[in-house]
Image 1 (cartoon, helix red, strand yellow):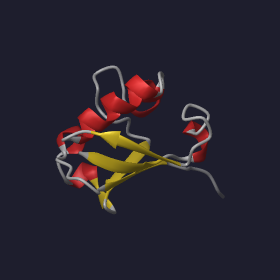
Image 2 (cartoon, rainbow, N blue to C red):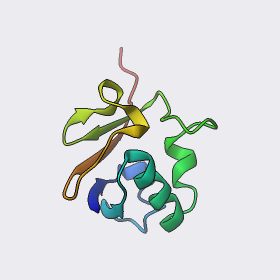
Image 3 (cartoon, rainbow, N blue to C red):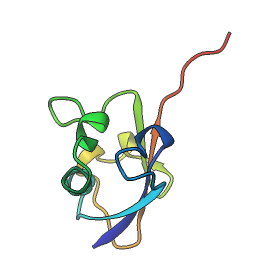
Image 4 (cartoon, rainbow, N blue to C red):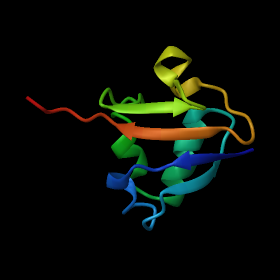
Length: 92
């Protein structure tokens, strides 16, 4: 099943400057694996060496933070929208 994945600007160089791509997968992990296959190096930017989503990367499925769902095991359905948002720090 295909889901829409919104790609943040810093990662768009991996996706050929595409802000939105489609990927297949029953879970978020499957989608990340599919993105890695299509765009080598993608997983390393999103996940740590254990396969968990990096703490400074926020991932939402249909506007719900996956940290409050099942993380990488979050189940997806056709038409879902995955948004990847790197955390931004700074300010005064």
